[in-house]
Length: 452
Image (cartoon, rainbow, N blue to C red):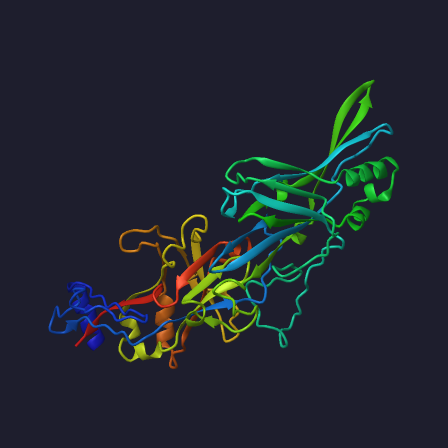
């Protein structure tokens, strides 16, 4: 059989590579790539008939609760507009016995915020935050078990969760406003003064035996929680849920000596902690995008497409005429298929570096990320490769070989349509962005051998 002949020849000959450049540019001559005739029966060929359509999708929402990382701040970028990150959480009475002497006097009430190590944006500039008391209980969104009248189920949805678009009402007057020059790489803990009036009230209620300060459930009704909102600067910072707490300082007289005392109100119900991401695209190249609306081709967004964690922006990649490859290349002769993604020039360095890792998601006509693309039993990911002479902006290489071969083996080969964004976990708990050139940044390279 011809296929057996090919396998025998390939065992003794150098493997031939055909680079099918899927872009809006012409491919190289095969002889220039060393793909010319090597044997009377084996030769390299190439095609440039396929195209890649690149656009930006703006998701309706994604779950951002229970990530363990609180994000707050803002930054503005000409490609992705302004993203404003706010975090919402509850604090509780704490465990163990707590007694307060009748002569106890209030000292201060503070919020302890250790850095988590996460940051994005210009951390050399000062950032400003407001802290507000919540005016209502944090209430998660419960998904219907059926989706006939909703969007198709997304890997970024979750039942009894809170989303990047969720909101919880707050008391208008801030409990505190503070400005810092961040040091996110350190293990420092910020100690932010809260309202003296609130702290004095807590201590007075405790001394009086009020159930709002003696019963955990009553306390959450009395004090539903806090919101931290960025109001100035150009960076988003992370703070760990597990180590954040409100601390009440007061003084008691013990054996005739004034003694400093503290009581910690740590975060409770971590599944209800969530990060809100409000995005303003008005002054960016993506101004025409509508949340939950139709994708915008790169040709209509200044030639670029953007993926941004947290906000719901993803890059949509479509190869509409994949079926035409099947008539030229038997799927079993494909040696390797690589999707190469390069950041737009001068968009991957500080203060907005490219994400360390990107992933691909299956999708449909609704442009919802249904599931991460799999390579066998592993989620398909690609790490960012640092710039070099051939790739001055760096790149991501996705090995699509098994996936593409299976597509081409189908009787009716569908269009190849994927969404590009960081993997699920970093996409839900960050604000990193990637900008690509809609015509030059994304190429599908297919290597295979043929026989005459």
